Every structure is written in C-alpha cells, then in structure tokens.
Length: 330
Ligand SMILES: [Zn+2]
Image (tube, rainbow, N blue to C red; front, top):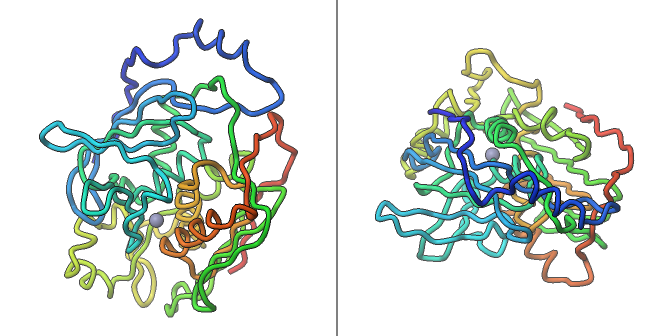
C-alpha cells in the first residue's frame, strides 16, 4: 500500500490570476464552494475484493459535486455521481453505481474525508471496484487532500437544512434526523462483546473536529466473523494493517486502539461519509442507535421523500463560534 503525495500538474486547475478574478466576483457573506487545488494519486488494496486499486483525486468545476469515474482495464470509463440515489448495496460498506453495471464500493471513508475537508466538487478517478482501504480510517485521505491543497470557487456552498424530525428503523437499530443550529452527529453502539459493549459519542462537526476527533478512527471487525466474511467473498484484503480486529478479550492490533472509544468514533465517521451522499453538508442533527450503512441510506431516502422536511441553504461565511469538542460516554 503506497501513498504518493506528489501533486500532479493539471492545466484545468485554476491558475492564481484566474482564481483571484473568480474571488473578486464572489459574495463575501457566504461560504464558497471548494475543490482540490491539484490532482493527487494514491493506491492500495480493496478491503473486501482484495484487489489493488489506483485512484486519482482531481479538481472539478463549480456545482459538479463529488463524482466517481470508474475506469475499466480496457480504458473505458463511466461516471457515477456520489449520490444517495446511486447507492446499490449497503452490506458491509456503501457501494454506488448502476444496478447490474459498473460500481464503486467502500466510498464512505473517502466521502467522510471530503466532508471533513469541506470539499464540494471533486472527480475521483478509480481503477478497480473498490476505494482502497488504506489504514481503515479517513486520515490518509485527509492527508492526501491537504497535500493537494484546496481552493475556493465562485459559487456559494449549500447545506442540507433539516426542517423536521424523521426516523427510520426499529428499537434494534435506528437513525433519527432532526433540526439543529449546529451540524451534530451522535451515535451509540451495543455489541455482545466484553471488549466493546455499549459506547456512545456525540460530535459537533465544526472547527476541524472531524480531523482531530474522528478521522483517525479505523474500521473494525470481530475475529470470529472473519472466516464467515471470507466465505462470503468479503474482507479478502482485510488485515491488522487496515482494521481493528476484536477478540473475546481485547484487540489483536499491536499498539492497541487509537482512541479508547475508537469503534464508536469510526461509526460516526461512517455516518458522516454516508450522509455526505446527500449532496452537501448536513445542517441538522444525526442520531444513530446501532446504525449502519443500510439505515444511513434509508434515512436519506425517507428525508428526500418529504419535501417539507428539508431545504438547501447557503452557509454563512463566518460560522458561529461553537465548541466542537468531542463528547463521549462509555
Ligand atoms: Zn467504516
């Protein structure tokens, strides 16, 4: 697994004078859309397929959104907008594409990094069926985006404002979306494991808290489930280099956990990534109880089905001073 941090030259990226011209014509009272300054390449293994994948993150035009360009070995390609409407599978990870056609799996950790880096527009070229798992978290993608640099664009950012509460699921697992002046993610997990049991956490997604509190949290799995996953054709690329492996009496990874409650933090990371498939940041409150990719997607389907439950809003340029500290109770 390698990360190549050399930014590639791309004539489509804005030159300094062009960018200045765009900025002069923009409004100063709203936050502006953002894209990458330069293309940047990375490569790694797919967690579930075990296939090697190469990926280039590239700048994209205003209002392009996040688009995955799946490139086939033949050189042919197809564009898949990163939208909840293109989700085709939510078992073990979130896969977007076209039913019976090309798809890209495990988009959520990269989507979370793009959300945490406030990137609105990017073209993700990928050779392979799955986004590389890297170290199992969003941190390597955050690093890539920082190396590429980011630029403001000429149009206002938009956020998805939640106007009323919606809920999907049952007492065994549910997602609730509701109004909030501050983007807030809370989640609890409850596993039948002496190592994890119940963990609960809440995070206000402001002032860089995603990077400092969430981005390094790795995906996880239980040792006893590993063989079942392999038999189902999943987790072929899984290893202690890219997942926390939980046993009956601890974690197998040398060095242990990155945070005491790394697992619930990773579940928040997943939720941030899955909810970014809405097409913009969430101005509202997300709460998940034992939730996963399926319920995250179901919540967006239900939300968008009710036009009175949401609307797109512009984001003020100067966000209110909010204490974004991570609050957790184990
Ligand atoms: Zn995950």
